Figure 1: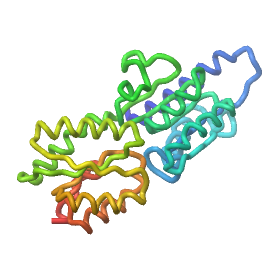
Figure 2 (figure 1 turned 90 degrees about the vertical axis):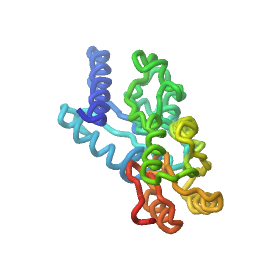
Figure 3 (figure 1 turned 60 degrees about the horizontal axis):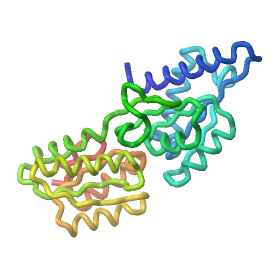
Figure 4 (figure 1 turned 120 degrees about the horizontal axis):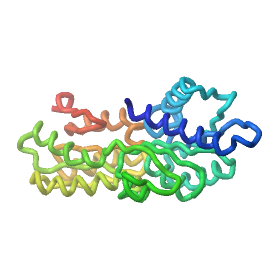
Length: 262
């Protein structure tokens, strides 16, 4: 069973719970609040992820416009907008909140203690402060993690295997994204085990990418590891183009870019 399938089932379960609690009241359309970091398609967006969710909810008997409705809000890659958007969804009295990033989930958690929250993130939800524990999340929040932060060391290990003499690696991460902060911290621990020196490449928006690569080149990094985030996903082409331009072998979104830059 896919992780997004389970998220949809959790959303469905939340709706069923709401329906049961309101069984003695007039029927109403359940509202799903969708809080995205970016517009368009892919992880953390209000695009493909919501399309998959709508299709799978239809299979469970929840039809948009008939017994459910969606309220979409996107921060357009500006993480500081998330708290206000989460508050807006709460004021709309949605019945359940859904998001696919740690930043959005934290904004939702801070906005309400009563509306059910379902998340799918790449980081550690316990370390991020989303849940009390994996076994007992606590409060009004539940969801899944792709444990992307736990794979930070594996990215470095794969780069080391690809380039045996590798000694210095640039790591691209967003200090404003809790999940990538965790990945950066995990990377530092793994680097010590692998005998690698890391060079921090901080980006907060797409406009920072080109300068980050220039900085990595000046620091004489021999390879690049990119931590996974909505910002990275939405700017994958620019990252690949910059890696090729700067002839920097890179690990980007699960793939090693090596032959194109060698």
